[in-house]
Length: 473
Image (cartoon, rainbow, N blue to C red; front, top):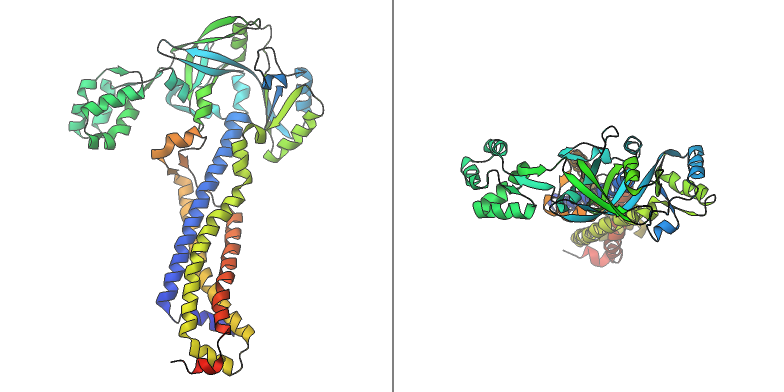
């Protein structure tokens, strides 16, 4: 009977109840989307860190971590490989040569880390082969010698990202932007700009602010010209410590969500790199290991640590601490985001229930006078608060989940802050993810908030004196 009475009391003042329910609904939708975006970023960062940058486990020579010299290769490489082949937790591994070098073109120079790899084996461990930018060439091919795969940021530093409004580009633009804007671009026809800054400054001189803001990104994207097959000179130290130089041609340009990784890492065929530094065999400075599951990384580390003391075995947690921190503290983000929203909503719920109690002072006094005890009065007020809160929370969770599901397919593109996000390893386009654990956690938080919010109004009702309450007009 108390449950039935409490539910009917919620709807005695429909407008007031609906205002609270709508407020709770909007608050929960905001919480679900915020956490969904954070969960999406965390999932993306962890995935990209493992499958583009560090794998689950890496092995290096202990001394190599302190001083990246060419002679500090993985200790007992043959025995390490035999051990890797015997571990069931491992799905694959690759050997890499890793050298610090200087890359140069006729227009600029940049410091890079050159990875000597086996392109076919690398495809099974990393997803770099899937990150080639549109119009950015192809992945490394063992059949074609002299190729080098560089990051989008390296291409930018070496001025291999150039901009040219060719006749073909202007024809394409004529189909998507107004003709007067295309005519303003005529003075820039067939002029090659070696940097984004030079090109945008030239656009500013020809276009108005409004036109530039509206069509600038489209024009820049169409004018972009990657200098594929351009020569890059790589300078590094050989096995004797003498500087040597080699010429490679750009076969492809990749772009990940981590601008820092793209700015430092270039890839060449390991055998060709060995020919440059003069090794009789391909040197192994790094072994990257992919496990069957992320949870197997620690087990693999423990097994390898005990057998090869000359090597450092590190898991993704040590190699990508930012991704590990996000992964470990995601529950804290749940608590903070939802907690702040629930705290704000609690004051509105308390205010509404206090008004309900004050309006029903005479009614509550009568219920007490005919024998309803304090426990039932308290339960009735508490249930009214829970019904009021949970109605809004249920609608909010369903709507928030539906919106997050839709955005999870299309993604949310933070184009204005894309460069800043990529500088710290986050994608400019995020795909929200709402996990069942979050829904369960939010349900508990809603119930807890309703219980806490019901205490003050219920105590106010319990303090009523039946005789005085009956006299209230």
